Image 1 (tube, one colour):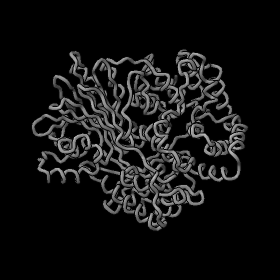
Image 2 (tube, helix red, strand yellow):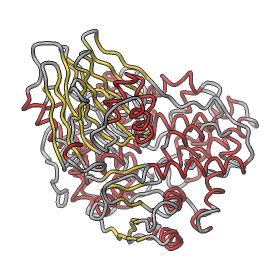
Image 3 (cartoon, rainbow, N blue to C red):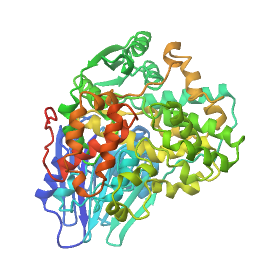
Image 4 (cartoon, rainbow, N blue to C red):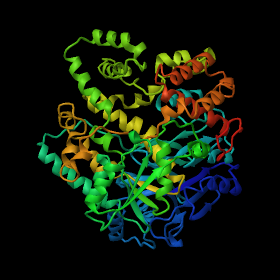
Length: 635
């Protein structure tokens, strides 16, 4: 796990070496162990290294082929590198390190751009082919590793961190379209960065930059069109084999490795399969004094069953003390509050290990979230009521859906949203600000800046791929291209790398993903039972109590804090005129949702939190009234 940055251009004026070093060293936490540079007349590559495989200096980056004509900087892990290495060695390539990075230079020599399609892993890399005057940028299929890109005056710049671009001289004008997406998705999404001048390489995409211009290619997308007809037992056997291989591949490391064990099905299964290959897995669980947010007892059951070296950490998180530091590492506004416990458990685990495996991705592959259950009931409602009745019913209950007096209406509103005949309406379900709330939140000036922009446009380029899918597979597809890369993977990457810790996700294995998308909906949600197949698999490996219990999120009691401990802080920060002074938001509506949440009349947790995080980001990066690491205590 590392940080990369650089530039390429065929014009007289390029960034200086000093600017490249400054951009590179923004990412010290991503790569505290080594730093490297490569420059020639057309390109500059910067790298910060966190040593994982082959701890020798020979594996430092940039890393070259035999004649130095190919240079690469790489962030991530290639899990099938041993197979690729053997294949390339058979073709006559000589390897001088034991790192996975070296398969990139020799793989490119053999397969060219097609190398990307052969990689199974989490990665973002930049490869410079000096003889062909070509820069290749590539990103993994799910978007686990970030890669920002920007082009100006014939120069292409890239970086793992948005903060790199200030050192490359790009303007810092905020993009209002990104703000609109952020308030819906909790991040500016993969279609935007918060800066108008900077974009992102999409998940499953590569970019080629040469004197002929810039070309972008999508090399992978999810495919739910080909379903297999197998019995439940046959599916369980296939999932068992695929998950075992996925876990085993992620155990390769030359530094200490452990496991996040939450006590939920997914992370518990990862530990169970790891125990086949590791004598005494090192596991980490975190708990809170608020029992409703703690799963320690369930994690302990799994740890005892598999005889792990188990570490329990009771958090008394100083959120106000670290929030400015964490949000500065994201570089963009980010409002998934579960980034906080992810940050704290990563910090604790880093005292013992450099790599940890997680259960991330199990819900997206096997239908674990409530929204997938909503599609099951929406499908049935469609068979009972006509489309006009479903749409009218949803419109009637919409004003009460956020009320704490009628909590069941929020669930009904979600189900009716997924039953809507219009695909665009089905996309609008959000925990953030919905379309009606944005109409009240935005000032006329902001509405003018946004024009006809929709926060759900991020799904438009996948419309053909989802045509004809069941409601469940459509929702799963949207999660893989929407919520996963726009929220969950950003959360995990930044919160862990802020502690120089590498996290690996066996459920996001390519083979396991290909298998899961071939499972028919009736097998994934048997009778509305979410994650049915994974639960049946877990019965073979886990205590019954850890499987059949209410699902808990990985979160802190932010809703309560916004009403109590942080009550005055919220009002002081949001209502003092900094963010409101931009002219984006209506003061009266911001005041109203704060009042409603703090009085208990409505639950606006996610909306108030997203505004608070946006306010702090604004003070860090726009008016600079806060600095990374500043405490919010007493403000």
